[in-house]
Length: 262
Image 1: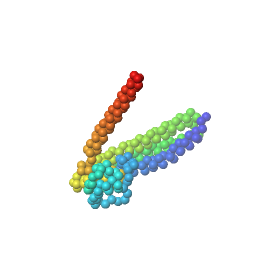
Image 2 (image 1 turned 60 degrees about the vertical axis):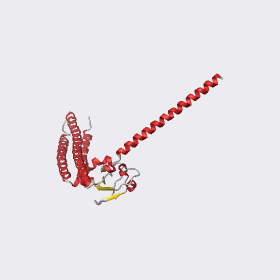
Image 3 (image 1 turned 90 degrees about the vertical axis):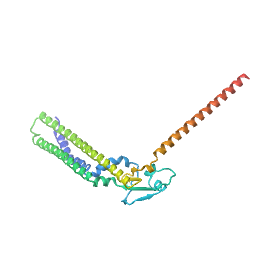
Image 4 (image 1 turned 135 degrees about the horizontal axis):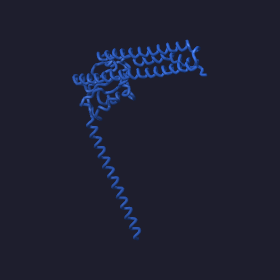
């Protein structure tokens, strides 16, 4: 006969762990700040973060200074050229959190979180009630009935875990959608402000990423031209090496032929 007491203990362990897991779930979704970090996390990897508050005053830098002090800007500067740049900084985290759309997104996420949390709490209460009922009659029912009740409790456990995972996924999708919308708003606003104020570059202090770069400091075409030139040079060198090998081979064959004739 199966020891039902062990199963009951397991069920109690599940109910005791429910609140902890729910708290972890809630902690992971509270605040628009977490939402904002989702979109910038990948870009922040291996990129230096600019610490401390940054003033909004205009900063003029020489190309050489930018290369030495801000490596993330080097890709927008022409090698060897001295260019006066007008650069400004923006904290994408604060911008997305403090703007009207960000505040509305936070309210929406809080509402979604509240609904999901309420549903999870209902499932918790159902499990707790079922465990209590099982305890009250476990010593008076037959072994077959006991096993049937235990099977029901296990099913409730599986369903609960599945519901928590679905809730976490739903919350993640809601956060991702809001983040993408806010990021698009941020980038559009940065472009408008940069063009209006005639800026050369706008850098995100959260990630070090260049959010805007004017054509004045964009050297993409120069890089493409250099890549094509380098490729042509490499092809020419390969052809010369091939010709040299052919010349050596022909000379060697002539030498062998002359030796054989002698």
